[in-house]
Image (cartoon, rainbow, N blue to C red):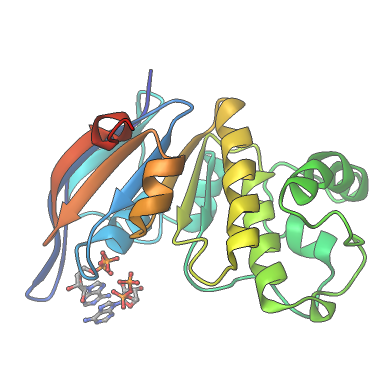
Length: 230
Ligand code: ADP
Ligand code: ADP
């Protein structure tokens, strides 16, 4: 089942053709890597998928429906959760307040119960079982804040979670927690788009990889085809 169909996306900034006709499909429930050198166009594709930029040409279908996401909020309502490269958690708020930030599906009154039910398991998977939900984020280290950011996206029960280099600032232990939490959400049927240029984690974690170069998709292939049996 195709969840996301990206077809002929083009985005130009002035004279820079950041993305020049990218096409690929993300299957339902798969972990799909997006790879390529700096400047290949990955972030621009992510911004179009998450409603932060509009394509100059091309289409995005989500679950068979043409989407015009328009804004990050619209993307979130449409079931797309994003962790991008800048931390967006708010240090002055508590862990729970950060987890609920911008969650379109939860009313004010049942926030606390919902936070506990939905996010506790994700926090545990991410190795944050020791945190209290009412702890201010200022108590947490940088790695833990990044993990809270990831927990927020994974706990949203989105159809597509986009993680843009989520482990770049994490230790190996923290990264391993991210991998197991990502596997769990994918097993529940959510698709994951995982932007990375670490070949090891791509081969280990991801089912499929799309490689970009100079704004083009050069290949989409199963990672099983890239792994040498020992
Ligand atoms: P990465 O390669 O890790 O995605 P970049 O340094 O390419 O990071 O981009 C970081 C941010 O700056 C992105 O939001 C991108 O859209 C923006 N950006 C990149 N290049 C330019 C540029 N030439 N002018 C303005 N913004 C840019
Ligand atoms: P990647 O994420 O793969 O590093 P980007 O999508 O960030 O690639 O960038 C692709 C190309 O588009 C780069 O040449 C970058 O400098 C350029 N670019 C990205 N965002 C902007 C922007 N806002 N303004 C101008 N150029 C940009």
